[in-house]
Amino acid sequence: MERTQLLNVLLELSASFGPPGQEEEVAAICRRHLEGRAVCRRDRLGSLVAEFAGDGPRVMLAAHLDEVGLMVKAVTAEGYLRFLPLGAWWEAVLPGTPVRLKGRTGEVRGVIGSRPPHFLRTEERRRPLAFEEMFIDVGAGSLAAAKAMGLEAGVMAVPDVSPEVLAGGVVRGKALDDRVGVAALLAVAKRLAAESHPNTILVVGTVQEEIGGRGGRTAAQMLHPDVCLVLEGTPADDLPGTASELVQGGLGRGPQIRIFDPSMIGNRRLIEMVREEAETRGIPYQLAVRETGGTDGGTIHLVDLGVPTLVLGIPVRYAHAPACLASLDDLEKTVELVSALIRRLDMVTVGRL
Ligand SMILES: [Zn+2]
Image (cartoon, rainbow, N blue to C red; front, side):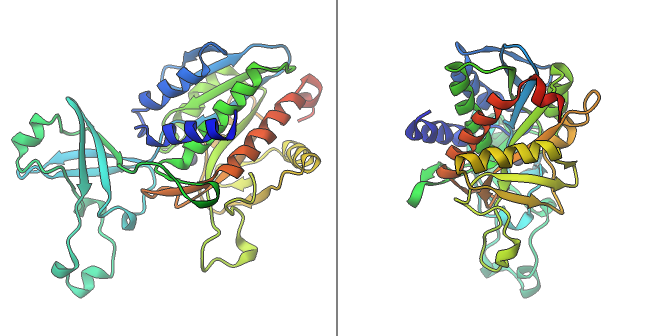
């Protein structure tokens, strides 16, 4: 996929609506890019699978379609929407965020309300609001008006942020965790369709990752992979105030190999293979040992007798915040690395993992 095409796919994916459990719009974009190249199907939770049939081992490539979102819990008499977080949000980033909701009768725009500083006491300014104190304002004015807009308990919302290209091939947009991974997945699939490879490739867009790796688990149970690579928009840490020796996910510094997080230990032999391949090709990479967090790898590697799995990250600054940044260079390098790895994963190599 050309750089411009890759960029356009990423922008389209970033703009699409896909909180956990409502990923259909993102899945439809993927299907459009994959159909004609591979047979597409879904598991019963909604994860999308495109199979590139071949011999040899079953290689699963997974990226999650969903993004952190919000779910309406109740509508007040004045038409304000109270909500729950879907996925790990930090409360402090939410107030003042413009949002898009999918009401029962169509799309609605609004904003997460915040009390202006004029009305805050000193002690209130010192702590972020709790989710229970926040609300979405769609300008309804009454419960009846909100209802007429199709707004009720269960309606979901995501940030209303249009993707933009900034300087130096950096993209700003919502949901770059994990739409960068999904864009990489689609680009790898496009390359595969034009090349020969020794294995069966299972390209999987998983659902409900942000609430506990649910779609990754059911997809892997359906597919019985022999090996899995998870492509993840991983939180970047090259921020002011972080000691340079602690930076493990810098923007523009290449794909990140996740050695450890509390949900999974990356397969050691797979890690060595990825490093060899990156070094041969002159692709820079970063190693991550994470004290917190988890990915689809956490559930996928425990399916069947265990699946040798590795998470490759594309660094995303401000992950799980309304507007994130990611680098097209990192995305391109990840596509190149993953495409090369797939060609190496034959019966003998996978048998040694
Ligand atoms: Zn993610």
